[in-house]
Image (cartoon, rainbow, N blue to C red):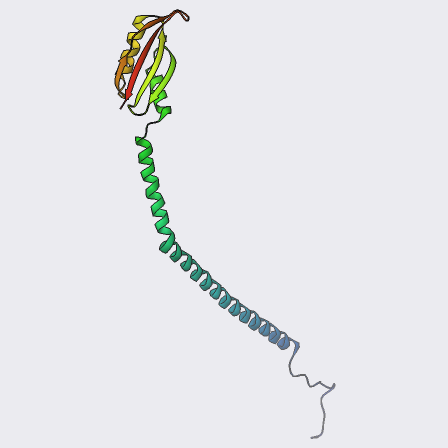
Length: 170
């Protein structure tokens, strides 16, 4: 009885099952993805180093050469602002004269003498009281250092009193 075969059907020589083959395929796929991620990470590191080096080079170039230009420009800007603040402005002069004007007085002409910093106004008014108030108004402003009234004349063409005023600016 030693020669009794109890096998009813014949088995193939496939020792590995379908599940084990699938597991090996997934393992190979995972290893490929892992290798790709390692390669991509190294590429990103290299790009970061290149960008960092470029940034340091540009920063050094700015600090080394352009910084003096920026500082020089800023100092020139500060100096020019100070000079402009000290410089006489025609618009500011006219605005101050406008503030000092009272009702009933009209300006016929405006002349500025740069050498003496004097403004000569040719003013018109209806009466002498308004003229006196206008002169006092000019004298009350700190913007003007000296106010001189000229000789008054009656203008028959306009029926107004003409009085010149010379204002010196501080």
